[in-house]
Length: 488
Image (cartoon, rainbow, N blue to C red; front, side):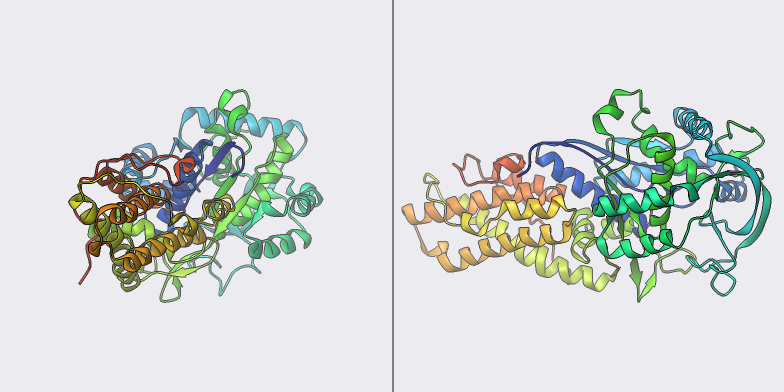
């Protein structure tokens, strides 16, 4: 394994106009898995989540709800925090863009960019999608509607201030060439590179008609465009460049984002940082979409999925497992309850649950000393699993963990410990109990409640990655209930 290092991972910050759905729970769970894995390695981890609370969409939603914007966002933030707690999200900090320290630091960054000559005044006229808080040109519209969500757009013409994005075209192309991993996964890089090569237009970074936002420091009659405001959260959460946390954790190692906001993070964000003279993040990883019958899930289409309903019905860990197992990170996947049930029954119940149950049942009946020689260790490749996780390949890492689980189940079937006694049984139990202990560690980032439950029944603790080797089993077995229940 690589040397211990600092590791800073972020999720998108979500609009506070609705409760958490599967689409935004997905990257949050994936980021949590990655953060937990790095903690297992002993890395110094900072895991950031948060909410994007400014902009016209929030103003409109608050007005509809009969509240002022601050009251509205305060209520929704509580819902997000409760949801992340239920889904076992182990974040280190929850950033809110309405936090006074965030707003103050964003203004400071804008002033610094302006001093470099990268901001100027002008007029903006184009089509605007309020739900996505995104501007589109006439050519980008699809059938006269937003090309991302398919909803109506409105023509916006107003005085604004521009950021000289065009100035950074060559610098961005050099970034992509020198650091190919910056645009991840690789198959999403071509679209970004081609768009940048085609030429960059300067972008509007203020609104004069939106009042719920960070005041623009150069002209208080304007507010900062929500997307510019939001991007700086990754730095303001660390207290800014003068804070010790910034020196400790910046640059971000992974910005995990949805592919629909890849442009903002892979083009606009690094250009703003270049202008402000701040070191660039190491990677922007654009994950895919969950679909339902081939269509992107969304509230407007009526096919969104409430992850809390799934967690309450099948368990939090079953949901977390399926989110990792159903599709490789970076690809699109199609969600169905039928697929979840199939994986729950065939993998979590029949493979993982069955292995732990059989092992503990036999161990409880054995009153001798559990000792033996490692035989199952040859089926375990910690280095390969860790290598996958260093590339944020949660899908193949979990697959390798289950390869080991299957090897352990085969070992049970081959050895038939129910027919053994004495030292032969002790040797088999030693291998199975040590395998179960190691599995409790490896599975913990993906399914923390399950990892803890296995450790409790073994009379051990969830250790670190360095503990994933066969040693002397020193637990005290106390079999509990089944890890998972079969769905009939």
